[in-house]
Image (cartoon, rainbow, N blue to C red):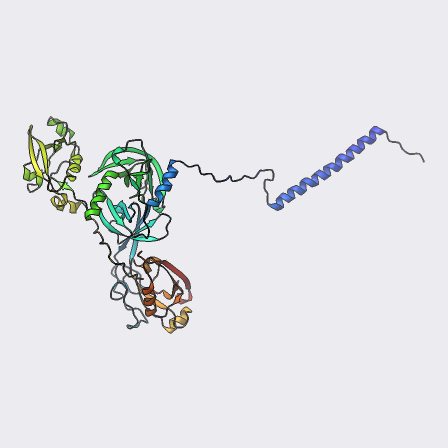
Length: 528
């Protein structure tokens, strides 16, 4: 049977077609396998090269160094304000005109423990408001400078150091309303790191300015800018430094430092239409701050001199020009029993110089007189109807000369708290009573265990950690308590500054005892 012969070129073409087909099938299977494998492993972009994180290499600059150096010296300040409220019945919502609190139900007069801080029944409800600010350490023994308005009228002031979770109770050593400066003192167990004060007279427009503080409660926030202006007469006795370093609520009382890390001012206020930073902030110069601080630690307050004259608040350039003068202060009023009045100065006089130095304006006159010692003599050169005359006035204390005016201008400074000679005994600040057997069953508490909280002192340790009326304390530092006496015994063994943890059973919600919470509440006792 004859065979069909295929020509050689035709055979090669068929072979190549067959090989190509096989290779296409194999390649397709490989690609399909690769894609399915990528999908199975979760790789969305298999042809992308993964990024790597390089080894940490701090960039470092002068601001970095300043931040690390100054952060231990800048503190966070929290001021508590306890608003008064009416006494209300147990379980009643606080409202205006509430009645006096009734005795708690199921209480035995023999078991009811008198409050740690005094006599009587459960205290009224209180509403705590908190304010915050910044301060900075100026003495290793715990002295701190801040703004007066940060602690004004505060019932309690707490200080927190950077990197330290402990809160320190601070006492107010003294304050000065007119420069908005207050000095605090905390009792730390180790020497603190004070800042280095600078000379604000050397500050120039364009210098670097760095602000450190706790804006909106965000501790250890560092912002930078420049000195925008100096000698801004924002308030009496304040020739402030203006800066564009970001200053916001909470920065008050914090330091403004130069590029060398020296404090050149205390951040005090901002110019704003929104309540937040708008590029203009003011700081009390360090030289004035140092003077105020030194007066406070020596005598508890700032003593300023006065000659007893009033002058127009508005600029009087036209008035002086009309009188043929280019400087001076026009006397608007001078009390006869004041230093200048006694010396012979009259209304309408123009004070040209003080102790032979020209007087630029009213702020210049007040600032210079304020620095003169009480009882010293001041030579006043005045222009009266075109004639120059000299008068000698005896400097008196400003607070005495303008007693009524200062009282009307603002509230008095907070009274300094006297230094404690003995550490106070730690107190929880609660009123407690026994728990009945029926209540123990409802609360699921073991037999003979638990005491009920029927009152919490405002601003106390118990208030701080969130104890509320109705809570049942079953243990303190893992020691079971079954009576007020047990609580007193444990409390007596504790020291100021010690951490305390209380196990509490709390009824909550509309279902009462059916909704129970078992939780730990803890905190650190006030004191060292």
